[in-house]
Length: 150
Image 1 (cartoon, rainbow, N blue to C red):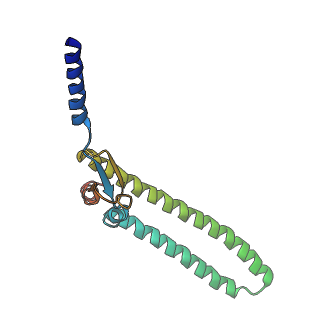
Image 2: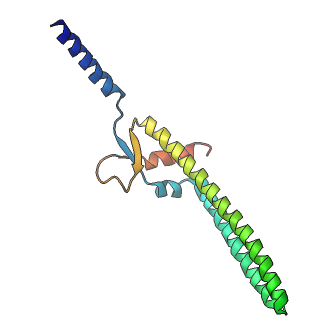
Image 3: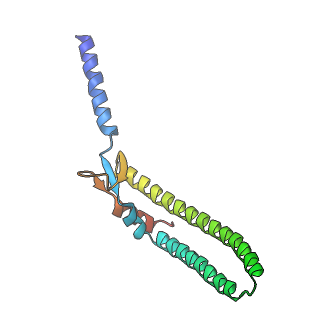
């Protein structure tokens, strides 16, 4: 009888502690909505678009220069030179864009983690995966991003 009582107390303790430690469910996030409503992300997107336009303008300007060259040999040398320059500019643009996308992703992820902890959630998944149930935390993440110095 004494062993049964100890087992009952142990079982009750495990169940009680397990319930207090367990989180309250799964959250979902609409990443695109968060990004669209995150002022820093919008600023960065405009910067990236400006750099892309500058790259397009570079090509347009070089095409005009190319048309004004009179000999095939000079055209070939110009073309070779511009190909190398453009590749360098394109690589710099791609690296900049990827760096900024990663930066935004990390900031959104940090905010989502903070909301997950605040809301006592087990996990946060993409809203397109959640069919029924769960808690949409997109607006809470947006609020956190707007409130912080991101």
